[in-house]
Amino acid sequence: MRTIKGPGVFLAQFAADAAPYNSLPGLAAWAAEKGFKGVQIPTWETRLIDMEKAATSDAYCDEIRGLLADHGLEITEFASHITGQLVAAHPCHDGVLDAFAPAHVRGNPARRRAWAEEQLRFAARASQRFGIDRHVTFSGALLWPYLYPYPQWPEGLVEEGFDELARRWTPILNDFDAHGVDVCYEIHPMEDLHDGHSWEYFLGKVKGHPRANLMYDPSHLVLQGMDYLAFIDHYHERIRTFHVKDAEFRPDGKSGAYGGYMPWAKRAGRFRSPGDGQVDFGAIFTKLSTYGFDGWAVLEWECFIKNPEDGAREGAQFIKDHIIRVSDRAFDDFVKSGADRAANRAMLGLGEA
Image (cartoon, rainbow, N blue to C red; front, side, top):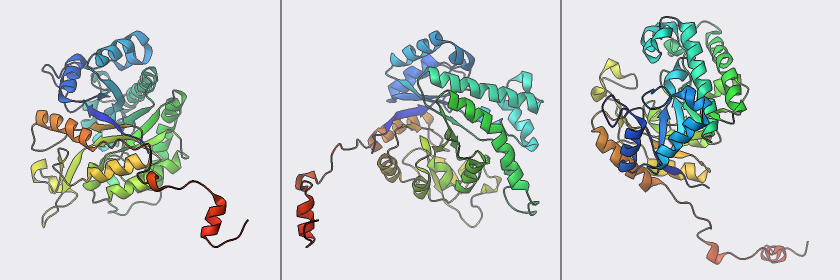
């Protein structure tokens, strides 16, 4: 068993143009004041970090490390959701996904993908320089437009999609492996890796690559009606990162998992601040601790109603209250007898061995 580290906070939802949210020094002071001990840094947020410099300059990394340490913080992981999404993008999403990339590669999917893959390689090298052995990302999606089998899928479509996804990610996984870093895919709608079956399909296609691992976020499983606790039982050996994000799923006579194109406030499935939704985090922290999860509990704050400042402050305390400091001895050691094979055999009514 292990004691989970935390609380950490994913900075993506809080970064903004106004101070203190528009720089790493500003957000570091803000995070420390809220009670966090670690920050998960989005690699696409150039207001916070220059990933190429982080990948190539020890001096730059030392500067960031010192800045965070001054506030009692460290980096939990780098996260590249936006760039991971661009590794595999169906053409129907090109117009929307172009906004994720810099202007000089927009309108050119091949150049956009090359840029994204370069950014991921920067993340592998930067993680190694910071002594971080895991990274968070998305898989991207080639098959998402065909999620529901109507019209019926042409024979071989799904296999071809996962074959191509594996072809694109295997060299990236190998590069992360060369730098001692796990790639943790967040299981998420709009990604080809969106549930257990799709994860297993991909893992098989990359031949069980040791660097292909999981980000565990129960909120996305709740909104699909999945058993988010059993998911840990199935995949705990590959769960290397953890987002603390709550959700509620309340289907009615008009709406279910698909949402009916409604805004968040009117959806059956909605993200909530930790403790305000339906997720049993006590059970999650117990399972992860029991299985020996040794990473950070990182708040990803998304809530359709609560003020983000309140969500951050409450979220830090929520995580702190749920971290279980695991025991170094069994609670019933006081009645434990020593090992004595002869006594054991006598208790069973057996003679000498």
